[in-house]
Length: 221
Length: 233
Ligand SMILES: [Fe+2]
Image (cartoon, rainbow over all chains, first blue to last red; front, side):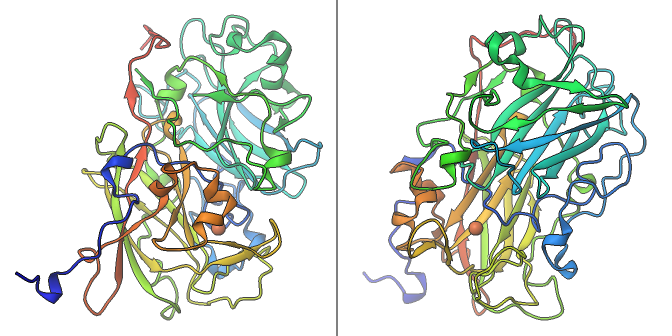
């Protein structure tokens, strides 16, 4: 018996569809050229309508196909700025990294949870600038429960980062830092790599060292 | 509830053949910490964030882009085989000549005014997605002498939680560059083959486009001793 020519199929390869290989899709780097595909205008502004977060100067305007702003309304809470630099193992700024944040609203509820602030998306994305800096405008998160300290979850992506690096940003001097179940799992001598310092006007600064003496603590989630 | 840790197919952060990892990969082992609601929740409402779906990368400009039109489709699943519905997949890639629209891409292959190479799709209730694009070209890079990246499409998924965030690359079958590419090779065999799409005649459409099938598998849910009861919500 022969198969009709229109019904013939190539032999299956050992590939994505092989049931014997079924499991987590492996991570790969974002590479250096993600700016026209990922960080949209407004992605780093969780409070207002600015175009923070994108790097539209890196490609022609006609090829900007991402969102134009983060339409949020005005969330409840104290407006803050999160800023810092991403640095490599030699202390050099990383101009082609991308940071994402995920955080609770002012009452400690995540977007999608019952009673969460309808004007707060909780998620932001910012490409680093040429000097390796990132900047978000957001609100000070509330504690997510008794015993937890206010914090912001961070993801770091970039050329040379095969995997997303996950960490947290805590706020210097906040009640609960000592008891927080994640921060207290970090060796005492490395905790400072997760604690942003205040510089007045609601600006909180935390550098992210990918490697080296003050290497940021990254998590195995 | 918490999410599984990475499985045996996960690449290391430091892979010296990929030169940029030498000064950028953390050298300390990642610290295992308990998962809380921070890690088990995640964003939703894609139109508010990235913008509405953009599933056809060949119709974003005045004309038809150069190159081989292709359909890429599949499902987003967790590692227990459950569909991941209503999740966004962001897509970006080089054009058919292997050139990115990015200003820092210095390779002199031609730009295509009709092709940006960026899009996004949202999975349906069964976790299915589908997009139309052109097959990207291979391109040279500076990692070592005569280094060429295999043709690939960059994919970015958030999944249901902070813990399930994934950025990966889709490769094409029978591309001889995959087995000598330091980025693909950071993933050990046989798991590297999870990133190779399957050419599929049942996705291919007559007189229109070749079809490829590619499923994305995110971390699954599990009960672990690390699970933290949170009685506040
Ligand atoms: Fe690429």
